[in-house]
Length: 166
Image (tube, rainbow, N blue to C red):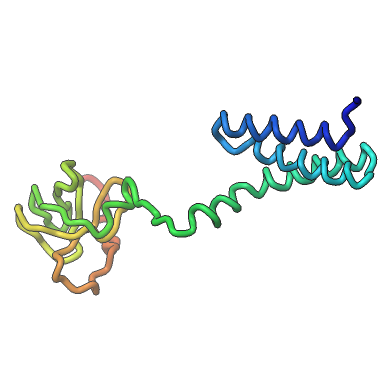
């Protein structure tokens, strides 16, 4: 008894499905489904060229859409986890070195010392502040009860021009 084309495609689908169970990564699953579709159209009497086209189209389409499929099916209720600098926004920090207007100071947040500037005027050592913005390696902080009307950017100072050797 010689196997027919649809049986060969079905065997390929089963083997690829078993490989998907053994391996991780959801790669061979799409080829298994492509082989299953090729098996169905082979059973309907479509020639080898049509079977190969169906296998290629289904496998490629599912492989290309897999990120979208998983995102909408498995990740629809997932909460986005904030990490790194993004996680510091809105968190509380403690002033370790007083924050003065021209130069700022340092704050401790999550056990680390960071350079900081105040959005709510000078802040003494030991005061608790909230991180509002991050620019490079500098945190912009304010008292938790301070209003949000303070500008984040300091006005540019004009450089003093020197003429000659004073």
